[in-house]
Image 1 (tube, rainbow, N blue to C red):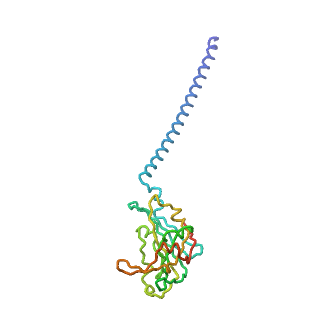
Image 2: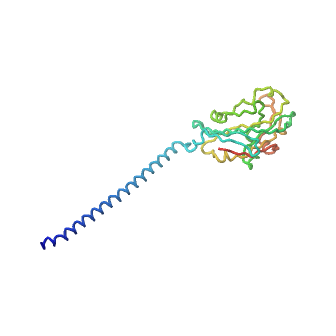
Image 3: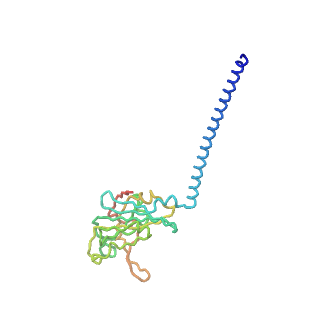
Length: 253
């Protein structure tokens, strides 16, 4: 009996050691598994980032395609301007990004007199930031909406077609009446960009002023390929001409 009593503490010590060793092994096994999972997670994330970078490298327009098909409504603080800007991207073109700007102005502007004689709406426009209104040669003609002034062209379609040809304001009797007067005008133009020259904030919503210039006093007669014509140098008009109207623009995305 005494020998059995002496062996009992030894057996208990062995059992305790075995239990402690098993617990430590289980702890390290679990800890090692968690570290491996974290490492795998980081590796997977890195693979995704590298893959996206590879896609962007293969397609330099990947980050800009979010603007393809986008339209932005245009209005003015005085309520006289309505319109739209549309963006279309065709990556097969040398300058893939086409932005079409359309602004219709309900404002009874007066006729002006050309230096060559005759009254008419001799206007051009410049759509830019206010500090740039006197720079360059403007953004094109400021025309009468002679017929159907209530209509608006499909600006996105024009951008996708890469054209600004529209005849919705033509085709009525007033078009042939030299004495007609207009109270509605429109400005329509487009600009082409590539990935290096396009800046959405600067080129779309940053151009917050529309100014109308009187080109009449600058009209001159000229002969081109044997034909007589009359016109004004737009750069001179923008630099020196009278601004007959200007509008503060608002863009709504």
